[in-house]
Figure 1 (cartoon, rainbow, N blue to C red):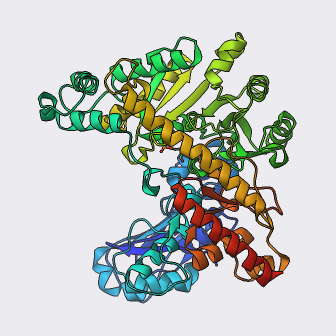
Figure 2: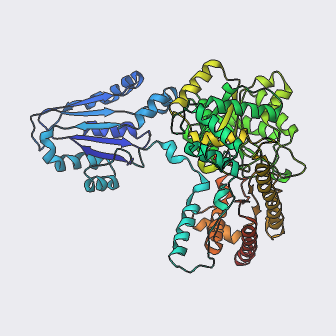
Figure 3: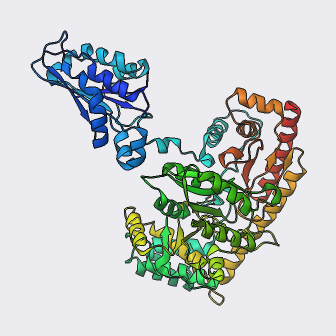
Length: 619
Ligand SMILES: Cc1ncc(COP(=O)(O)O)c(C=O)c1O
């Protein structure tokens, strides 16, 4: 029996199916033919919103129209509405309609209110033939069922996964509470190396940013002493642009003043013009990425495929699923410092075109979780590939300030397409920066921007319309972004401190990047590419066969088993490689390089001891 939701409310019995299957018409027919009790005629309505379906299914179900009889008497009329969800072929043609429709009941039975007292007698007749036992018992226990259940929620929301905040993190939080309540463990604290949250790991905020923020939030302090003049002038300008208060809504694309500053920043960075009208400020880069990615989703025809690196940052895999698109993974080359190989891009797209229409490619540079910084040649290859294959380019450049390798330099996609000239500089390109990363680490303040180039004007208008539904990113988040793109200049009072603090953070990150890779490479059973940039190491770990078998017996991926063991035994919370994707048969984990140096040292020693013990135990 196909499982579904059964609910009975105000005289309406509804059955929602989890999904269309070959059983669906049978189920609907069963409902239609169920002998519900009345002396009146049972009318079977074959209601659908699709003419194709109506004629198709009306024919099949019409023999079921018949008078009904039974033990109950009623003066009213019973209507059994049998509403069918669409068969797959129509689903493809009319996806939008289908999607909204599939969340509605496929069948409903309306009974007169005088029957309510007898529902106990009616329902079993229907349910016994239609609904599984589990659902029945749920219904009996809950006279008011929720509209949304796990079975009828948007399936894309159910399917999406975001490993960085998955079950390991939930367990880590539990362990923290256990420690706080006095439980004894082989460690005294949980080290949360799972998420790129620098300030949570002890990084100090940049004074200039916090001072500007402070004045923007509380302008009364503008007239007092204690704040440098450049801080005051930045805050005044932002306040004037936002009508005197950070509590006012801004334009949906953000304050024009700050968009102008972003454009000037990009011009300084790349040496090519940037248009403030191509800039959209957003609540963290995530929002900009998601709002632009969404533009490529289709509701009819083949699904859109988006090429993403494997391993990737799970914002992409999750959003692609949520927007009903198809993930098209291209593997990064672990043996070549997680480099990006055009042959692999070609393999990936050719394979994917059998199942979807590939329309976009995401490049994360510097890479998360892999820490590579792409060479200019590599970027040129990707741009040419994307042009050949008519792909929308997404350049995730949130780690552009986090480059540590002396032989690498950050090249923005915007700069490279501009240098290549026509036709490449006419390609659609969305690139992103955020105040969450870099030296700022202000991820809780949610600031970011997208520069979106070469959109068809009508598409651009529609995009701006779509983001207007979110009203605007927070003005305080925009203010932080303003500090990032309009930092103190030589000669200004904050310049020296700003430069010092920025350099200290970046130097410390660079030295942690170096030591983390070095340590992992010195631990038996682990190997780690140089962390050239970003905030993570993604070492490969050898998991012995016996441990793989144990993981399987627990229904876990081997790297999930490894990460849970690591957490329980050492208190280190990292993310299993399977959350980012990895070549089959290889196992990785991602750790941030964010613990402060003393804690990082402790963490790495714990890693070493754990790995040695793990190998002994499972070899
Ligand atoms: C590659 C990448 N892109 C985007 C983001 C999103 O950052 P935010 O939304 O905080 O700006 C992150 C966060 O970790 C990331 O690693």
